Image 1 (cartoon, rainbow, N blue to C red):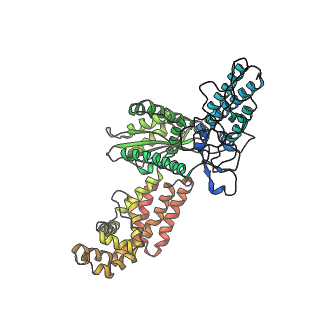
Image 2: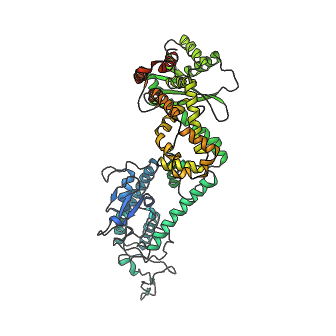
Image 3: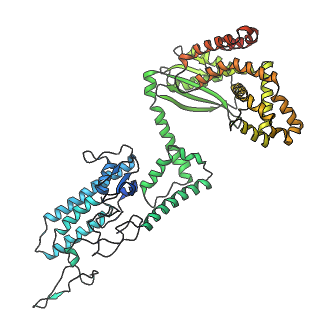
Length: 558
């Protein structure tokens, strides 16, 4: 018998597990070899006062108070009418449990057929059939647990006593062979076959077995962790939706599984994964035909300074990525972009596309208009988020805004380049950070001004505190310049004006750049309200807000 920790099976045929329930929930002499044990855990904390240890499903956390491992296996297999199905069980595990249950049913059927055809007067046939039943029981070592154990044991004890062969009797509870008056020896049976099997040492789970189980789990986890360390796999890779799925698939394969090598992964399996992605993308085509879709072209530059264009399709089912085109080695003229857009439009289907969105650059605008001339059913429009970013970029070029952004950048740069000032800043702000202006992110500059303005009082309190005055930084030239920048009242006044003026536009940008809800229906109204809000905030200083409104009108109407 093998216990839960994988101990060596007992070879004594005269000893077996007792039919009395034990804490290990195994009573048929086969131990914990059933494959279903790997998908549940014992819960002694829930079994206080109970004769049997309760089982808890590792997928849906359902508690089983009785029925043994066979009932739990029916739960995983989704057998209707027997027990509540596990709706979180992986498909491969469910299929494995169904096959195992079908195999056990066939084995039971064979035992019943042997019992029905049993001839008590033919010793040779009786010995052969008893040997077949023992083989069935050995083959069923990965069986169901209590329910099936009781079934097989019942049929076994309905047969006549076992007949032991010469020179192979290993039990001490045997009756010596007797000789008849004719001098012919008769084979005698073992006493153990007349009684219920005794409990073997491995029937009850020991404390040592519990620790061995825990150590086995730790060894497995450590082996996986070492592989991640050696392969430089990021820690957040375990958050992938495929992480646990891959582990479950390897577990279902069992011992001896060898993973694919480098050439198989980069060759056959890579091509197979690409085919699956293509099938997934094609599944969206029916939605495109039914509701129509929007084709989006997003131009960007990666870390290697390559100019790329991403093509995506949006529909009611969601957004799906089509492909990326590298246009670094060509001149991105309107005619070239038009040919590229036309190729993608024909792939998606002219009749499926209702709308196309691109960047606001002049060549993209010209290509979009050429596309509308070629396909009148398609409406082209510039990207709203890119349009608002360009508005903020133009506003950022104003002299008054440039000076304030540069001033704020000097403050944050000094803080984050020196350890002690950074420590003091976090102390006075309660651990909060200050967003730093970025030279290439136009919206970020205005958000950074909002951040530094929100911590105005904390920064001024910091540079006038005893900790700062007594430090060496307060006597340094750069430190003195930093203090002057923080205490500059004109800077804070201009910063507040720019924040109040840009805040409505930043709010619109967050609306169109988010995925919470479709924003096209709210966009034009949001821009209109943003301009009204800016005018309302500066009713008495309209000349100050006029350059901002002019920039919005030029970009939005153009």
